[in-house]
Figure 1 (tube, rainbow, N blue to C red):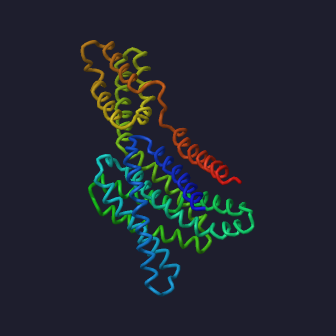
Figure 2 (cartoon, rainbow, N blue to C red):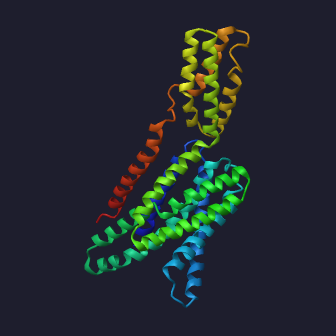
Figure 3 (tube, one colour):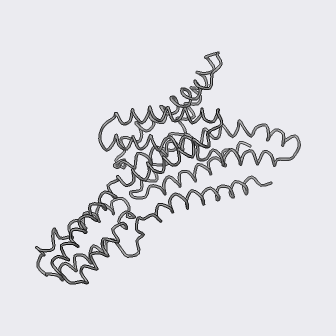
Length: 350
């Protein structure tokens, strides 16, 4: 039983980490750093659980829903995750863009979630397991374990911490810790209401609305990143160059080449890390400041410049478009869910 619970939840958590990693569409964070933070969070979550458990036990008074949901869950759990983030994430050199705040906070959230889910698994599958041992029929136990893992692998922590991560990224980029405090307060309230909605029976409505807000925040923060901002400025500059080229009646083929370069700018968002930065610098240096003051070489010089830029972008790179976002938010989430279901059922089969 212990092995089943741990393996099942680790598999679910691995899918969650993979999803987070894939959603980081531009500069990927170092995998080893993500794993290290994930492991640290699991250890501290275990210690946190022991500490809170002893504290509640020593109260010797019944704990109400509001206290449990907003203080023990909302305040204490969000505070623990925030401490991990501030100590182990904030100083990282790789934490250099607003969108990174979401990625790192979600990794911390995934570490917290996996250990919490192990506890939930024991809580909800123990009786079916004991009954199966007595009767020799383990189907109910397997079904109970499958259900709890599939339901909780994408928990409320993930929904809440997209918002926490957005505020963390803003705080890092703007060097203003008030964003961290604001994000913490909002996360505590949202987390508390998440648990309270479960008590009232309206969690699915709350979660659906939350999902829409999280997707919107993720897209906004991604577009605020250095990569998308650079692409935006580059498109604007190329538009001005194309207009100038038309006014000067330069060769039509050159104008077509310039338009093709502008159409492929989205591809630069698919480059990773230092490659992206270096290529951005190269493109900035290659493009002329204007068409009229063309350097030696005339139009042929311009053609060579734009061919170099076009080569940097690459014709086979995938442009950042609506299809790109659809792939991220449907392909990986849906296929990941179904793959997880299949693996769970194969692993727990009789």
